[in-house]
Length: 196
Image (cartoon, rainbow, N blue to C red; front, side):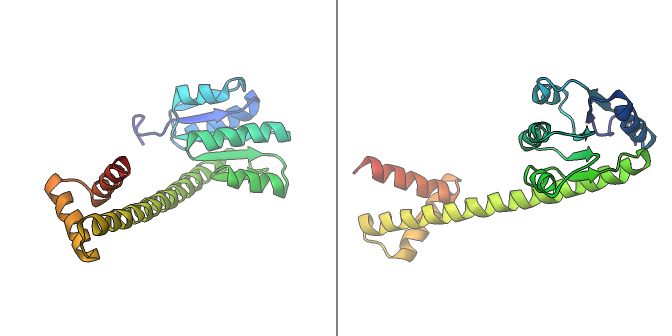
């Protein structure tokens, strides 16, 4: 793995000793771009400034407030996140999943485990991101379908067309103007509302 293709990794850890274990494990695994953030003040801004590919958060004995702050970071940054904690409860584990933490490791801070954990973290993040993308695409298609149905209804009413004729008109207009049918349908709805 060359330095330029090595992912940029941020370690968020207030403990220099524990951060050193993580850093050493990453470097031994061939990761060269590692940045350590030890200051929790303005954490989100610091993470955005580095713009990492992967985030490792190590929390020795986190309080609920600290965990919640880390979960907020997780929800905001949309990156693979591995979180190391020494002890946990089922509520914290559940909260980590809901916040989008890709790997939540309890009592597992050992440098030789870091690479497999990182690999798991990235692949879980990618799988989840793919599901999110598919969900968004499906929602968008459903929304387009509703818009097209409304536009067909308007065309049928205003121009006295059948449903098939209205759809053919939408499709041919979209092709002629090199736009999506949904865009043409939205234009018809907008124009119709303006003319009411």
